[in-house]
Length: 76
Image (tube, rainbow, N blue to C red; front, side, top):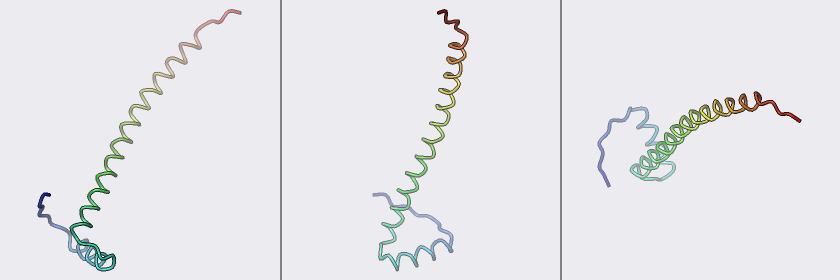
């Protein structure tokens, strides 16, 4: 486990301390849980951006193929 020193805004620290008293959770566990949650959230955002880019690439290619098929003259 790593030790980290960080500066927290006073208002955030005070709000966190009040919450910790109510939920009876150690500060260290609370911060670890919060970071884990935020990391998962950021990974989802990164994946979402990647999927949007790839979806646009597939869309463009699909439209190109569709136009090719429309240009084919099907004889009966």
